Amino acid sequence: MALTLELDSVTKNYDEFVAVDNLSFSISEGEIFGLLGPNGAGKTSSIRMMIGIIVPDSGAVRVFGNPLSRKVLDRVGRSSRTSSSSRNSKD
Image (cartoon, rainbow, N blue to C red):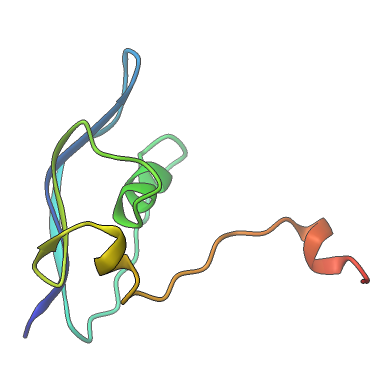
């Protein structure tokens, strides 16, 4: 099966704090994938790198075999987290 997402030796630091350290994995077409771990394990930073909100300090993120770019992300559906107050607001 074709790879839809690949992280290759991705690292992200915030000043001296290493949030993601040399993370590598791939997700094939049709797979269901989850990130599990304790607070501070780098889950949110990893997802933010996968969808282009932040850039890894080293390593590569590839979508459909291509380096992450706005053009590639336009092919991907994604949603952002909203606060409960915005979901409950009446317009």
